[in-house]
Length: 467
Image (tube, rainbow, N blue to C red; front, side, top):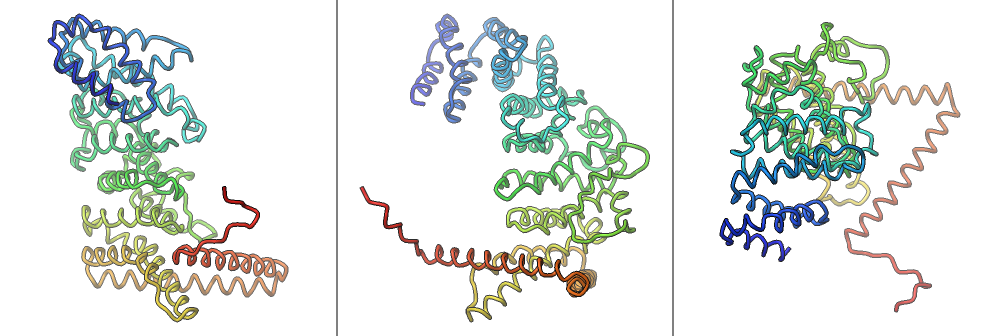
């Protein structure tokens, strides 16, 4: 890293004629280091060196250096994958350092076409682009998205013409690699968050909204993939990805409410059956609510988020509750009030779970816990925000309805268990055994947590001898 900083200083201080004379001495070794260095800090420092180097070069020298990237991009086959990825990285640096040079002779359009092809080969050709095995090949899609992000900031109109490019960017939202999820979320937010619902009235190529309007069902694909991010396993959740997902859902729900037709791929105005993903405990035939969910994208989104928050997981639930808070703050009562019960259901569930844990702990230990109640602080704050947005009377009626439904569901479940004990004693016995095993594991886990909290450590086995 120190050597790279020294090279950066030399590039800044050398006279331009002398620097141009030794172009090959600087450029090719720096590119080689950019591709092969394992340290992220070193790669960033090398990228900064190349950028500074390009800024001081004349157009004639730039043209010769640009031809390297062009030749490397044309190499085909598996053996040329590294060279193609290198060319994408160089294109990004060229755009960042010398946008004036890239705008000439149609170079920007060539870069966009090349990035579109590379991204389609990596993402678009796979029917299952969420396959974890494809997560190993993350470099090329990541650098493609990095170049797209720079183009969106510098020349946004250049990337709005390609439909295939944006179809693959939307698919990248559910790529196994977290960096690709994050940068694709940033790209989508930078393009679409600035256009309000009025921009989606008719197609205008000057606006980013034209991309969504030209791709049937793309708005629903974006929202569904963002929900997929929020529903990831707890260990895969990151604050940056969750925050970007909440930001994207905040602008998307406004468009879904104003123009629901943008969420449908056909003329039947129904969401696909496979995309409902209801995770609740209800079983049975389709109800009127289920049919409404398929017909109304906003209802689908709120229902989906509500179902995600029903699963245990602090990070997952916090992300969903922050989404509800964003809807209440940015969208107002027009969107929140009709779906208030759907939002209150997971919030009330968490508050009830925490209250039950606290009461159970007091009965067993006769002490109040200090860490458990904090889990309910965020849900209570969100509920207060929803009350302020919708009005006290509407809020209290919705909360009473949610509590009534939850109580009826619990009673129905108890009746089913009691009936099972009579009709199928063997199944009831298996259920009791499983419950006892679960309770035993929970008690063991709590004992370990208390030991760790007190700083109690287990003794080392006697057969282990210290050196």
